[in-house]
Structure formats: C-alpha cells, structure tokens
Image (cartoon, rainbow, N blue to C red; front, side, top):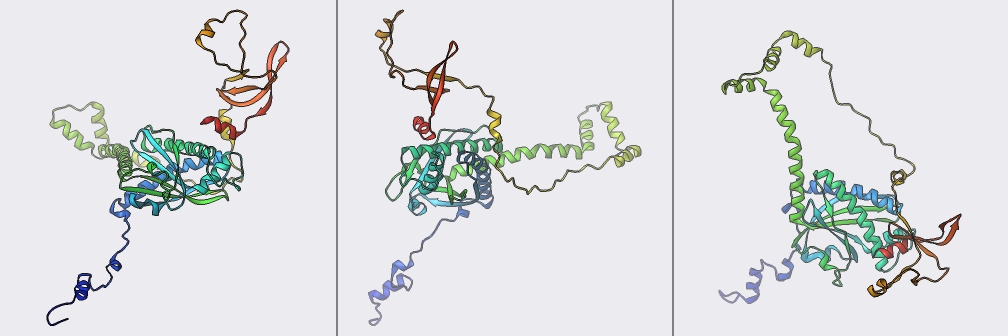
Length: 388
C-alpha cells in the first residue's frame, strides 16, 4: 500500500475473495435429481422401469438363449450440453416413439461392445467373438432384439396404466458424441432423465442399459400412474363410507320426504335386534390366506411356451421363379404362350412361409402330385438380411 492507496494486486485479491487465481473459484456444479424430481417420482420411474424391463428381460432371454437379468434402476438428471461426459464411449442408441397411450420418445442406450455381443448371439454365434465394428447386419440384429424387448415393455405398461400402449418400430443409430455421430437421436430438451439399469447376459455381459427421456415426459408418466392409483382406491373408500353410515342415510331420506322400503326398514331394525347380534357373533372369521414364499429356482429353463403356437396355421408357398413383364406383354398372353422365368432348369426352388423365404429345395413327383424336397434351410443371418 502506498499511503492510503491500494495496489492493483491487492484490489484483485479483494475482488476475488482473497484468492489470487480467479479460476480456482470455479466449481463443477452437478445437477441434483432432487431439484427436479421428488423421491416419490424417482421411485415411481424406477418401478415403471422395473416392471417394463422385467418382461423385456424374459423376451431377450428367449431370443439369445441366455440368462438375462435387468435390475437396480438409478435415476439421475443430465444436461444436454454435457452429453459427451455422460456417454464417453461409443454406444448404440435405439429410439422408440409411443403411438398410442402416451406422447413421447424413449431412448435406450447400450455400449457398442455389449451390442456387438448381442448381435453375435442373434446371428448364431456364442458371443465370445463379437465383431469389432458394427455393420448393417449387426445393427439389424440388435434392432430386432430391442424391438422384441420394447414390445414386451409396452405390453407390461398397458397393464400398469390400464390402457392400450403401442410403439413404433424402433430406429437404431451408432452414438459417438466425440465424433458427432447420432446426436440427432437424443431428444433436444435441455434437461433429460437417465434411468440406468444393470444388465447381465449369462457370463458375457455385466454392464448397464440406460433409458433416456425428457423430464416433462417422465413427469407425465408419473402423473398418469398416480391418477390410475387414485382411481382404483376411490371405489373401495366410497363403498366403505356407505357401509359405515347407514343411519345417516336413513336420516337423509327422511329429510327429503322419501319413504324407505320395507326391506330397508327390516335391515335397520335387525341391526338393533339382540338375535341378529348373536348371529353376527356366530359368523365364521374370514381372513386372507397366506402362503409361504417360493424360493426354489428351476434347474432347467422353461421352453414350453412355444407349445402354445404349434397349432397356428401358416401359408407355405413353393416359388418356381419370377419375371417382370410390361402391360403390353401381359395383354398379348394367350393359350400356348411361354413365359421365361429367372431361374435355370434344375436350380433349387424357393420355399416361403407367410411370404418369408425359409428354405430351398428340389421339385419331386409323389404319385400324381408335385412335391418339394428340402435341400437347404436359410440361416438366421440371411433371414435378417432380407428384413432390411
């Protein structure tokens, strides 16, 4: 200090609260989920996710022929501007839009390495040698798996919310925020809710699968759930209040000059009759049955669900070949005309089930009827290719 004057360094130190480096005052302030969602809303979102993903795990287990567990939801709030910090690794994002029951978007996010294992299992592999890069065929396999999962989840939500819930076919994108890939898949709202679940698939995957949705959509789900709960409890409460106050009802009827019926008078008189009191005492005591908790786990997986579908009829078609002709050529057809097909003589014919190619074979004659001998079954990988 020079006399009564402060130096510039001293002035800066006072303005910075005694700190010489203003940058040292900067703190990384993270978003608190309690500032946007109450504990009840967090629990409700976790419960909705538990119910939805419980059935999804069963569907995925059937597809992959592996034990699948999806447990332990954790709810958090993320800032759209900090998505790169939330998802630092390459991921796969699956977007699902609700077409009936709700109006919103739900995003599933899994690590690309986990998606590669799921794709390998879907394509007939054992999951131990997944592809290093996700190609179109691998994305199609993951998309089909997630389609089955979200379909089961929508069915469960229909039961929970007591209304029809439908979804659109999911769209899938690679999500690499460092490279700017897939950013349009994530909703553009400033604040998002992330519900993270632990995902275990056999001994192959022990990771997380995340659900990302806008805050307003998450709150609307909770409000809808609470309204359903209030509606289901309103009817029993109303009936209980009627049973507790029969005398007040009789008084109300007298006040409005409505004569009670003889049956109502008898019921009212019987309530003061000692014999009726004895009859009530002699009534058996009724209580809810209690059962021991079932803790035994089956040693072998249940695979009998397929038996429910065995009697469903399917249309089987054997296709000899195809060709394209103009309208002029079709109009010139007559008896004796020859149409050349796109297959060579002796080439296997296609066997289709509900217009889906599943096998190939050769034409044979059985007595006086044509038949086809199956020579090759189309692989699951080839069937997935034809879905695109």
